Length: 82
Image 1 (tube, rainbow, N blue to C red):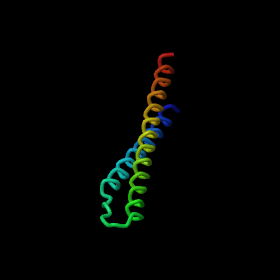
Image 2: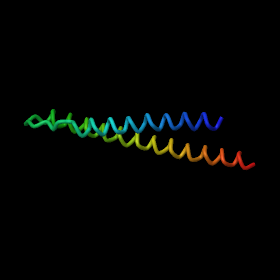
Image 3: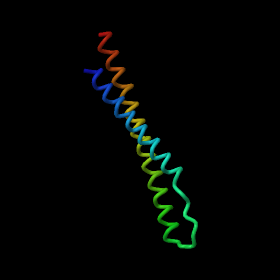
Image 4: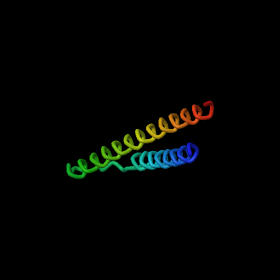
């Protein structure tokens, strides 16, 4: 049972890390809007801010999954040596 949960958590971690990398690449590839319209610059700034926030959230989720895997491994080891 621990193995199935750990494999599922590892799968979720891989998906989160791929999402993090995709968002990082899209954020880096965003063109800067050069123009004198403040609305366009404000929109671009909002998009960049939103992507940075999403990237941080995905990274935090990946960290939580990693902690979950460590805890599951610890419980597995405890049950093995009982």
